[in-house]
Image (cartoon, rainbow, N blue to C red):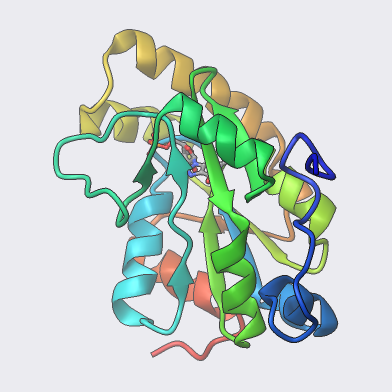
Length: 217
Ligand code: 5GP
């Protein structure tokens, strides 16, 4: 049978018996989407750092592991930082409707959120966090409007440029590309339910968990 939604980003898989499928369980629970928080924001703003700080201090928060077609950077571990896959495998996952959302980021590589683990987490009544780009956040908004959408902003544009240069992981061309995307993303911050300024990682992480409805500690 062909997938109901060939784009892979807006539908869901056919369900097995009721009660055994996390999709069904999550959809039967009207509060499920409210436990999902989507964190977006421009390149180098520190989404990964803030998410890691949340994970370190609030281990009950589950962070989705995305699938990507980009190559691992030194130190990145398959299955931990990302699931690193070939273009053909990404195509297969689109075809079999395995993504909650997916997007081409910075005009290059594809990144996507596997739907199954997210829905299983929500069905278990536990908080889940996605760290994705603007296009992905818009797709999640379309299918799960009850989720919380958080935009992580830099204290200033100059600070964003400084952070991107400072981390030294991109060459001048890639930096220019990322800053161009960042301008578009910054202009979309008003679409989000909350804007958190990443002036201090711990503080921003605390604000994020407060938005998630968890007590800070
Ligand atoms: P990086 O290559 O630096 O790890 O990530 C580049 C961008 O991809 C980041 O802005 C990040 O938010 C975004 N990204 C990571 N995972 C996903 C995903 O599953 N879906 C979408 N749409 N974007 C993602």
